[in-house]
Length: 354
Length: 252
Image 1 (cartoon, one colour):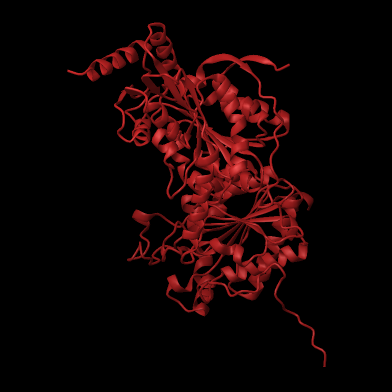
Image 2 (spheres, chains in turn purple, cyan; image 1 turned 90 degrees about the horizontal axis):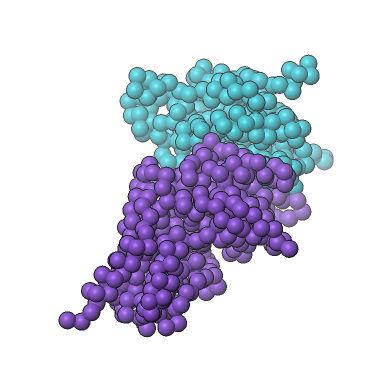
């Protein structure tokens, strides 16, 4: 029988990583994700695995680079300003096709911002973030259970595609406590014949992202892009709630989606046909699924804890075929279900003819 | 009459021309590494890290498993590799811009933690690959593209002496500065590399070899003048000596 525990989201990520087969964790303090680093410091050594508190976020991501290059399952975590510092490293990891997991427990920005929950790193997470053409696979949990499960699952996804995977959470998900069923699948990391293990009895392996011969880097990018198309074909995940006959389609992820789900239930109780599409993968983005459900709706409503970032991808998906409205809170603000309702009601009233 | 070769290409050194400039020290230092890896018979368990700089493609010349590292981050990458696989022999090859400027935090903290890998720090007092800019190790009054009137200590500081900085830390087991300006110095440098690798395999901890090297192109000198310059000038700013040899001191 699966063990059931009460944990906060940050610790649930830590335990998910351990159960997902994380061999090496490299961290650096930043609020609101410190419980995760502390959890790894306490627990990794007991499993004979590696924990290092790095001297900076930059060092931590490059330690991940080394451990991943050596063929191990490696991970780092941080919060928004620290994730910005790791972007160079993510670009190198993606360029060298090294699998790894990174967790962003987002806080308010820009700048030092605050330590309240936010979703304002959406663009950075899903559009690449660092320099060059690449994407991270981005998973957006909406509960402590998903913080745990998605982290464990992220290691398999990373290994499957040899690509960095980000778990994009927020300070509320990191700090809140919920009951949790522990991940109990045995980690099965694949063989990594490309890893740096010492070239005993074989040709040398090289981990690189530098291709300075004319045309070589373009060819290299074509290979990376082909991989991105495979990820788009295979890894899109979303959760649909009351979508089949929905007239008002909410699109929201993470904490915002939890709130929208509540609003959907209230509308349904009143006989209004509302539904929610919650992208679980923010990249690859469930564009076709959003378009399919939006076509039947009279309103698509996007809620985010930012100034309107994912809504750009929703607009691209819907291609002007349906009215799309937005409600967002900024700088660490979290919307209430009441204000979401008011915003949707106003939008619906606006759409009434004449 | 049968002839016995006394000097041949080490197995680990690939049989290709390097893209290094005439008189550059990288070729000599690569060869020393290859000789030591051959002599220790450790190709099958060695991983090297190439820096950002002229030697970024060192993996084209050293036939071993190698990784690139972001500019300055080789000590963090080495930490990751070595912690992940402690059975490997790991070395990071870094230049003076890479190690002493952008990567100063990483090298000092890796040294302070006593990470059990070896750093080969090639100090030629200038950024080579980017076209001859001032490095932290650029000599007083040395002209570079970014110190066109010479390094002015009042606004640009003095050359940073990294061995001396690392000596302030407790965990490193072996800290040495050597040179390659003449055959005896080259032989001594090889012994330093061998010693550091032996210490690493014995689990002694962080070892650091600074090698005074050349950059004839950006020094505006001939290869011969460059070697003489290391001997007469560079060595004065960066004294060649052993700063710490803890295993030897302990066993003496």
